[in-house]
Amino acid sequence: MTLPRRSFVEASGLALAAMALPRRAFGIGRPDADPIRIGVIGCGGRGSGAVRDAVAASDNVFITALGDLFPDRLAKSREGFAKTATENPRFAAAYQVTEDRCFTGFDAVTQVLATDCDLVILATPPAFRAEHLQAAIRAGKHVFAEKPVAVDVATALQAIEAADMAKAKGLAIVAGTQRRHDPRYQETIRRIHDGAIGDVVTGQVYWNQGGLWSYPRLPEWSDTEFQLRNWLYYTWASGDHIVEQHVHNIDVANWVMGGHPVRALAMGGRQTRTDPLYGHIFDHFTVEYEYADGRRVMSMCRQQAGTASKVGEAFQGTRGRSNGYDTIEGPNAWKHERLTGMSPYVEEHRALVKSIRDGAPLNEGRQIVESNLTAILGREAAYTGQALTWDELLASKLSILPTTMAFGPLLTPAVPTPGETTLDRTFNEGW
Image 1: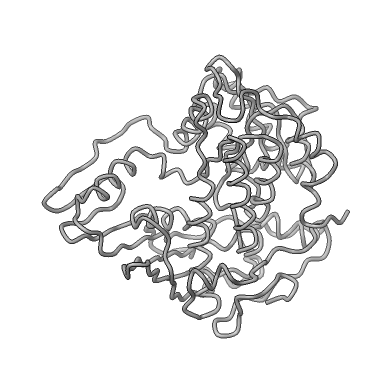
Image 2: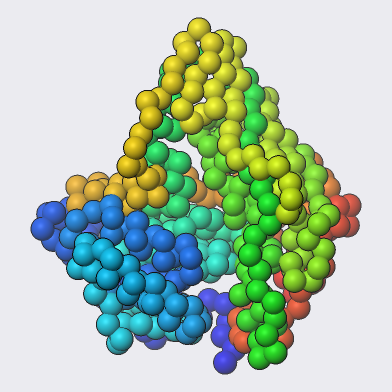
């Protein structure tokens, strides 16, 4: 089966989904006694983790539908949920998925949206996130969307449209940037904005770590299935690790600096993950981001086995410095008290549900897109070897998703070559 990229979320089932509007929608609010039903689209490790976090976060929420492209992934997720239910009575009461509400294939998103769920968790590979986000909002669902929500300019603009549609409909969008819901980050950055370290002059953000998982190819897998099973290693599917992972730290930089950068100069490459098993992405990036007032933030990320790990942020001001997380150094020295039993992964779901029940739905759509585009700007500066501006990126025709999605042949674009790779490219050009 071959479907145009937009068609598998615009199929006939979407018309039914559009009628499944959440009760008490459009900002009216919902009493605590009014149950919130959650559907899940993407049942891998992050999707399954988000289910457990959502149940732990709020009372009277129920998991009612599951969807995944691959039947074996869905089955594995259900086995894990069944085990959790035997160990956790609260989860057992909240997990109400029946066989007829489990869906697989490219149209699983349409089928989940056609159920009576009020909220959906979007945790498929990032390539599908913007399209699924639009479909969910059209169907009248509140959304928890894992980051990132875009892999190129085209999908970023699609996500912005969805965010604006959600605002008009009174629907919530919370992104998986859990630092935004961590009280330690919240209080520390509030103090930075209040002048605790003086005027912020510069900053550094890091996500340096070892390697990640991969799945060797099985004989029965098509090119498409192999790439989707190993989506981390294909820019069209993940955005590359600067976008898929390092966006967390880049989001903190934008939060502290009060906006997005206007220019990026970068370098990166592929030194250790050179086997075709690892697709065509880079394994390291370094980016200098310049903001509108001339301040700069240095960004560094890598995924290389056997290397030193460093994940975090640092900001320097005219009267001190901070890690952005829990510490202020200088004349206004301060340390956040240690928190026990708090998980920002749970807090983001608690905030989402509370906003729905309060009738003041959170909408982090444009916020995550801005940080997402910042990461894409850095990636493209490294891929092309050019100093790129924010305006040049947005004016480009960058659209790197395959035009059709089917189980069958699918090329692997060449490894980007600085000085040769161009900004205005499409997937089928092979870069």
